[in-house]
Every structure is written in C-alpha cells, then in structure tokens.
Length: 146
Image (cartoon, rainbow, N blue to C red; front, side):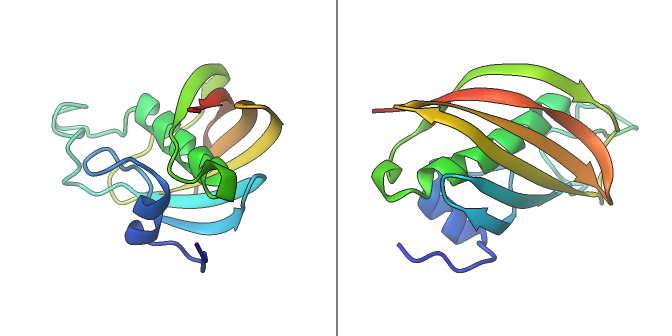
C-alpha cells in the first residue's frame, strides 16, 4: 500500500478497522510507520456524543480524546506491512492528564510516538492540543492481534 499524505477518511479506513460513528480521526497529516503520527479531529456540533455530554454545554468526553489518540497510534503500527489487516487493542493507559476542555468547532491535533515495541506488545506516548494549547497527554500500552 502506498501512503500519500495527508490521509483522508478512505485511506484511514484502509488501515484501521474503526468505522463511523467511532472513527475519531479526520485526517493523518504526518506519518512515520512504526514511529510517529500526527492526526486531526474537528469536533462538529452534530457529533453523536455531544447531545448527552452535556446538554446546553457540549464538551468532548476525555475518554473519546484518548480513543482518538489510540486510533492515531494504531495508524503508526498498522501502517507497517507486517501488521496490515490486524487489530491493535488497548493494553493499558498511564499518566493521563486532561488540561483543557474541547468544544464544538475546535480542532484537536493528536500526536503519538511509539517508544517501544517487543513482539506484539508496545508502548507509546501521546498528546492532543487545540491551537497549541495542551488538552490531554499520557501514555498507552497496546497489543497487536496475532
């Protein structure tokens, strides 16, 4: 598979098994397979999760920001030829800190960097920003389905 940046929805879906409404990245703007990726998600006012979180004061749930970051990390791993067609599953989440509320109309920039990969297990660090302001950071562990 040849990857030409930026990756749009169709190209992301060729890598990830996620689909709407749970595909939480809009585009991948930087990618070093096996190493690093940068993706974006614009939070739209009509997002499925905003109707209940919270009525009259919509805020993107922190757990969904972490999921978007995990999906960005999965692009790093699943863009490697040996992992194509596999699934990446959460193994753990550490040191997550939420620093900023994210509202409709704002664009999250997800940055994930793979730190270690031993066999099917790996660890990476992540952060998401809005206009350069830190929204969330942390680390995640994952397993590539064999």
